[in-house]
Length: 388
Ligand code: HEM
Image (cartoon, helix red, strand yellow):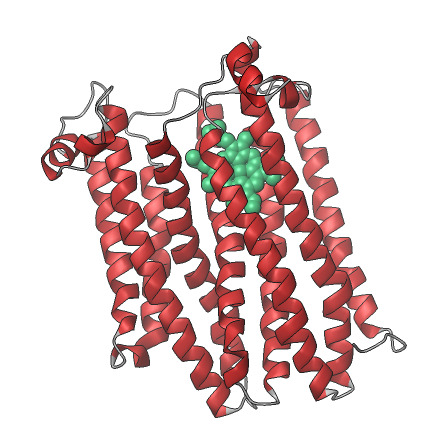
């Protein structure tokens, strides 16, 4: 069955082009801002502060980081505006997207009175969200100015909570959630968004940073070994969080494994899961193949192979992960509606046994991530490993 057949027969509705572009664009903007600021705080800043780095390397990496963060600010601002217009078009029931871009229509949407029973007007929450977009972007865009770059750490650490708040504020419910399930929906959705954007945005940021290769000294390999080591822990936590929350979201929207290929929603979810598994596999190459060799080259003081591994091999795999991550972002808007409603399955009911199965899956996941770290460490300690 072709996708067109699938879509037509199962009642799947493809979202309009403006919705696809604004939704992917919004998550791209969040990935840039959240991913780059979190990676700066957890990975780049501590690695650059380690004693023994060559001054020129630190300066080159700080300059490139500042430039990347500044561009991330531009993307956040532009995508935030289109995302807001997308909300206006959706609320305007049939309003063409072109009209939704008009400031007057956006103003009406933001100032609409609160719904009955709401503790706050929905528009007010979106005013706060977009004020945060402007503040986070301003902090990042300021880094285009050479004078401001001296305050890179302070600005990145300011933009971090602001960009996290952009997604969290939009999730605040204007009316009290009906039951505990709805609260879990909100929490897992935010965990999913934050961990996914940190993972993809962090990979993209470090891949871009690695293009400074030509400007760096011979001893930059050790610094990059440290950067990759720090980020692999961040990535591992993100993988755990994205898979756990993704599992919850999938169970809410898909009523059985078969629906992954019999419904339009399920089909796009299947594509997304395949892309994510490919990213995990690429991460596995880094963890099991490259990291142990990097650790070994570092111990043996093999400068040339350390530089080769950390600044040629590693970024190549990371670029492949970034490309897969971009494909994940492109698929997200197609997850519209729900496989359950397409297939006429009942709405999910969270029971004790569902929680037990979920907990067992999450424990298995945690155990396999733990084993990943231990195995990678054990491989790093093996003396007879080829260095390059
Ligand atoms: C790189 C990894 C991933 C990223 C960056 C990512 C990102 C996202 C984002 C941004 C959304 C939209 C959330 C929203 O609109 O509120 C989403 C939705 C969703 N994700 Fe993921 N995700 C990833 C992996 C996964 C995995 C592995 C699964 C399944 C096990 C999954 C299942 C889902 C489901 C079911 C939804 C749809 C929620 C809905 O229909 O409202 N995701 N994802």
